[in-house]
Image 1 (cartoon, rainbow, N blue to C red):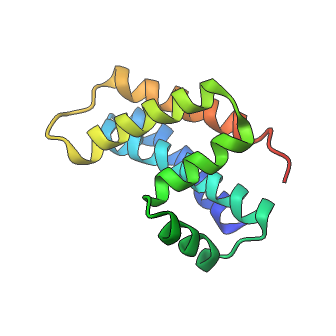
Image 2 (cartoon, rainbow, N blue to C red; image 1 turned 90 degrees about the vertical axis):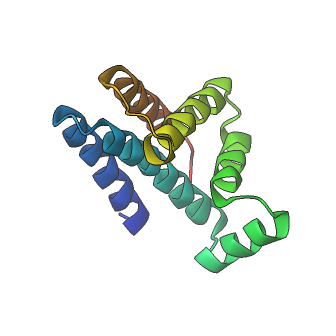
Length: 127
């Protein structure tokens, strides 16, 4: 198993543990990054890209790395639910990491649900 898949799985498991311990903002963070790491794994494996290859593409397109990964996976999946779920999860992650508000259990649970659905969709991609 690749390092990115291990990190993805670890973040997914951490998000559940953090939720149970009521560290909701950290759980949202881990749920999001677990999905992002899975996306990076797919792109690197499917396209035989190195980290340097990806960075060159991001620099060339002049967009943020997260947008790059999401857009590339969105083209592969072509599923409205993916776009919606990753968009909602990203909004929650930004709130959890950067806004001066607390994440409540309900929003945290939504992030775990989004993450689970996203990873289920990512697993359907043949690499």
